[in-house]
Image (cartoon, helix red, strand yellow):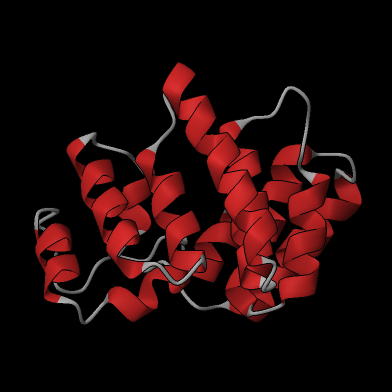
Length: 169
């Protein structure tokens, strides 16, 4: 998790080092592959992000893992396949709970700001813990000047200078 927190704080090189070290210890971890996909996509290293997004897939499909693949495909410009994945995740949501945060990120990766804002708002209404990353999530950076984004984030009532996500050693 430290690698993901470092990524959210923009410390990509340290995040990369920590993720690679963890991967050496746990080469078959699907959870770690999911985190690495998120880190590399945030780095703009789309090919690596897509590779790890593919590695974290399991059967039966898990919404969070599948959504990461959709996000990675969208970032890689494979929009048709990304939309197919989005459709699969929406089908899963019709049967079981799926965190709206996943849809926010998938739509953002597809460049669909309106839908991303809708699902961001919904994720706050449903008290998604993942939505707490919204103010610092690199993928949502294009939304940060949108008044609707600022209104949604304003509901968090965070301090003007939030504490670091990463414990100082």
